Image (cartoon, rainbow, N blue to C red; front, side):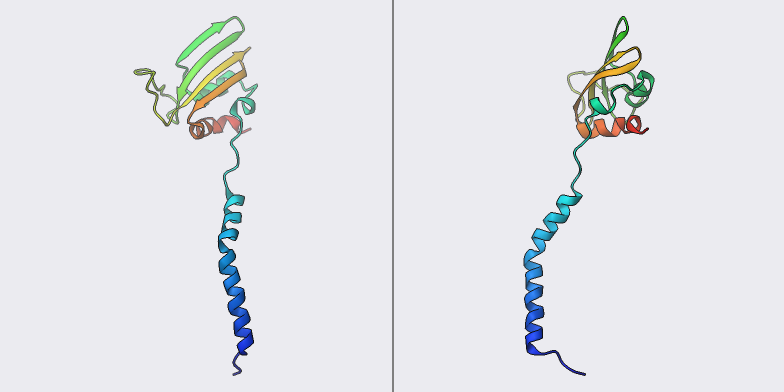
Length: 131
């Protein structure tokens, strides 16, 4: 069996040292590539959805104001789709809730504003985004 030359061992050690020195940079690049993509603008993504399908995701509205062909609704919701949140204490909505102001015209969503926990909004309305 032949032993590696001393220069070969030194080269190997040098390459290994470079790899270790650059490891944080490589790790940062991998993490950046895997980082969560920006969340979809739900108001735009859900625009035009049928009111019944929207309600299947959101649960019942906390407040509804019909005005001719326009229907304005306010929601505070989470993944317990059948339960409204904040009815007992509307000023103390849980941190894990999604608040929505929605305007429907002829039973289709024309405008919606989502506030509160945006991750929760994305989870609650994910079924409505699926085609």
